Length: 144
Image 1: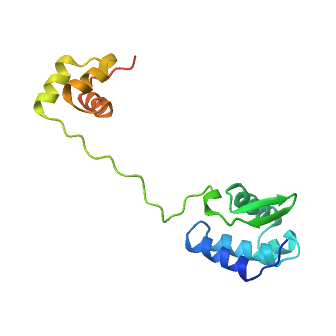
Image 2: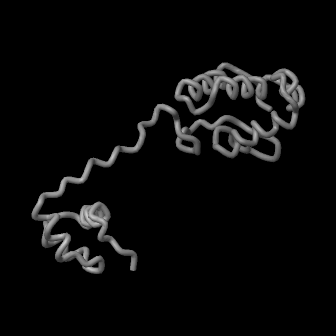
């Protein structure tokens, strides 16, 4: 295992600041890089060896630790390889409520056919996505 030097401490701190890892995982990583063996690292962390191995495996699976060779791991230098989402990322945008005029509503109720959504989109000047949402809202959408 590589020794816990300033560069590794800095990487752990950056991962913690960007919220890719928790404080407990940061402590596990510090023990991982400062201990001569994984058993010693587990003992220093105050947890069972099996639990420690599971946590290290999870960090490797999520891309925080990169396997160099069998039994040799290092911290990732590229956050794009991390398969976890940072807690700082924005949630997906909320879909705006569907605005439908009275004439659009009437046209949909009388002329809508689920097989001709593109035609309806052209006629109403809306996207097919909006036509689908309108049909679902009006309760006239059918699965074919």
